Length: 243
Image 1 (cartoon, rainbow, N blue to C red):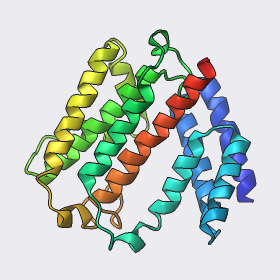
Image 2 (image 1 turned 60 degrees about the vertical axis):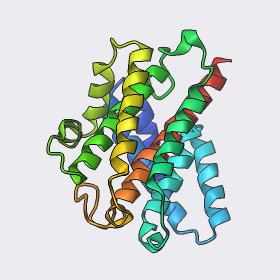
Image 3 (image 1 turned 180 degrees about the vertical axis):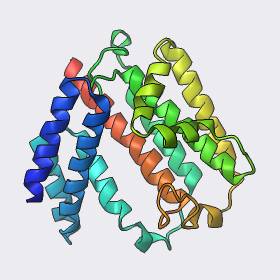
Image 4 (image 1 turned 180 degrees about the horizontal axis):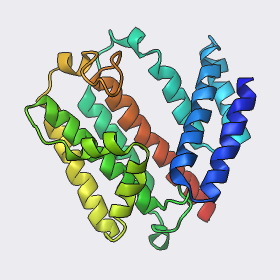
């Protein structure tokens, strides 16, 4: 039954996307991803699991699904890997580097062309990633004595609408202004991480809104590194379609 449900969720998401109903589309796509991840979790063999996700992705015609589905599968298994130390600064640096390597040499005339992610342009994706980087600034700041968390508060209050709100808020900014804000937020992230101990990063339950079974390092891997890899794949695919 679940294969049918994922295809129905995907079809509904595409319908909402065509109608420019971004929130409903994202909810449907999220449901499709979750169903695929559940099916993948039933496969014990890792190679077979990746092959299944790749095939499901090909059925949907979207490369972006593979990263997300594998990320969701791994997220449910994270508690079994908590004995592995992670360098959080390296992880956020790799994620940021991936984005900038992907956009290097992107056609100057295509930054604001819709279609890179739904009806978002590449500039919109960068604005979206900027808003998430500012959420991480707020989160890390709350671990180091900071009280004000305006972007995190907006994210938690607005739900899926946060994404479109933040992209729209940056519509009038130039690409250079968006990139400057993105880099500035990332620099703050790296600086704040240097003040946190490995024990703090690995402690479960410090982010109740994210899930009591997860720690800050889980959020960094999946909500940040995985998120940037996913959108970088979208940008790369979009660039290929422009050729």
